[in-house]
Image 1: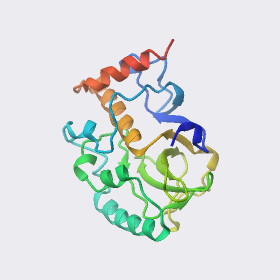
Image 2: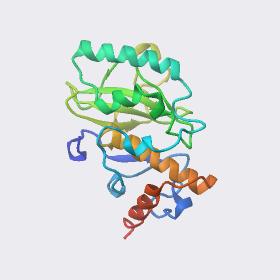
Image 3: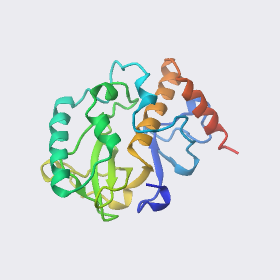
Image 4: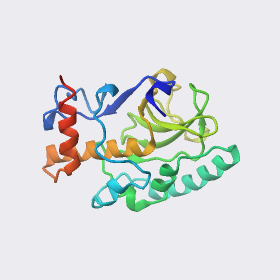
Length: 227
């Protein structure tokens, strides 16, 4: 889904990248900042749904897979069945990634985010479609969702400070505010690619781990948006 087609405003929730010389465009504003979507650089990979950009990287010592692996496997099974009942198509890249632990184990998070699969598509409060939660911040600060059009023919990734899930999952005292939902990626694979790459860049800057070659390209492209 293109940004121009989104029923939500466009922003990117992420960590600062001031440690790699991007303080002008990604300054520190707290654990997370809401940054300008229009200034995000083009990803330095061709995205074909096969996660080739991720397969060549090594498994992480601690990844987004670890926290709820058994719970997510059960939830994913229920989600697939629920989508079939509702005649909603889930994106192929999403089902591939969630069904493949080896891919998940290559994605790490500076803020200990973890996969958190909702077992049902939830009616979206805006946009006449569906939300499927798949990623959560470790402190419950932000949640990421698939946004699916009513039949699932198109999708995007959105983020929100609010929690959307099944009735049995609800834990927030106040209902979520739909105005806090923001569009942050045109596809699931695009989101995962940017999430993975930015986290690897952060780790390289703060912990001196190896910088992916694509990370240097990404930094240079981001710097060019300052002018």
